[in-house]
Length: 328
Image (cartoon, rainbow, N blue to C red):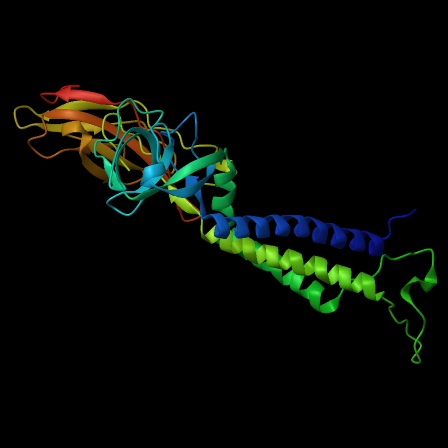
């Protein structure tokens, strides 16, 4: 049978509707499940939980009370700055429904410096590698625009109906001729109802998908060697800066210059001083920073940051260096 343009158009339209219905139904299930069971999607923007949960993974978590938390659970909790950190519980103390948690990333050498006091926390149930990159693209401007176009197409299908499969070998397939001499399309009521129902499910699913995507929460799996700091598929992970060095700028006054190798299109967050507790933002294109006086001892490292579709992605730490008397 020859594949005519009209038949190809019909098959293309039916394929879009079928794929959309499957994805739409999945979105409906996810939206209902999230509402019914209180689950929260989490997109990992950094990688201190590697290899268990790598950067760009999408994790599903569920809120549980403090009494249900156990050592070894991976939990997501808010920090003092309002962001979220997702690490593993290495120590827990529960009193009167309030838990004091000591957390540590699987890739970190030491635990987070400060404990977290919570009445409940989001416990990670499972994670899917790389899916977070896709979600980050979908909830970006381009992804939302394409989803809007697809929803408009589905709405047009609901309003106009879907024609029967064309039969190019049968001139009667388009129906009898009306009084004006034109051909009148005949669409069976059952087919019209089925196609409209299929499109409706798909449109509802697309709308549900938008709701689900907007509810996804970014989370940091913060690196803490030794102190914590709090994408799309083509990113394939953000390289950590390398080549960290330090040098004395003014002997006796504690001024130190830190330098590192560039990461393309990235800005930086430099951590230095006692336990790396001083944080300095460094603009893209700059790969060094000179401290003020009185910075003779401490630990230094740097992380790279890039913004992709309004989402900030963070690399792993550079090597940590301990310096004394302005010497690494």
